[in-house]
Image (tube, rainbow, N blue to C red; front, side, top):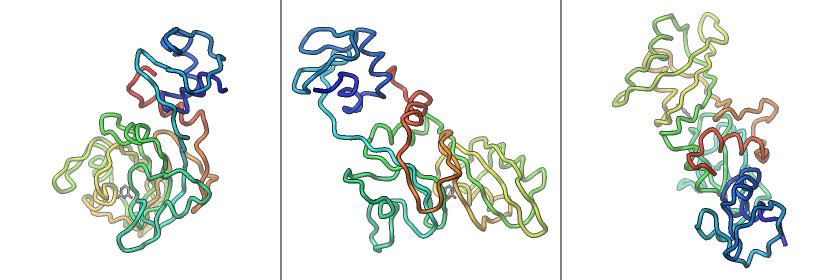
Length: 241
Ligand code: URA
């Protein structure tokens, strides 16, 4: 027997806390009866509905935050047998896959999951999930370069949406720049800096939708915390659940 909110959360309805709310709001039925007591125990074989929709028992959902080193591709398999981000996550039985992509030569944070809805939520352009990158680029950016990056510029067939840009460090031949974007065009950050004449030498992603972890070293991973999953869902989830 498991608690009703856990059954619902495991089925992918929403976070456990949100599922408790659904129960309290009288939106959950067990075998045709509305149940408003969150602790209610169920076998899992009952007919359980949320807003009238039958909920099937779910597999375990897994949410992982990985700090990808360069030299790994962001897919499950590679046609050229290169190492993939999934190879870096050992001991997970579920079939996880990366949410979006980081280039082979880009390092930094990437989320892996087996929850398709969660992955879609983070990738859907409408949700404008902010990704923060730290780029080491050639040369120094002047005010006009920064203005163009911030305002949006043509990267060949696409005009970028507004971005946030902050210079972290400058020396004669190179600069370290933080840039926050919410789009995910192919090699977008590299193409943006290319377009202002400052090619990227190194690129690292430091945050996804407010999730960050400077203590996670390259090649290491951890499970996303419940509060982090809830935060992403409440920020970007379109459903009331
Ligand atoms: N922009 C890039 O150019 N590369 C990445 O890997 C991610 C964003």
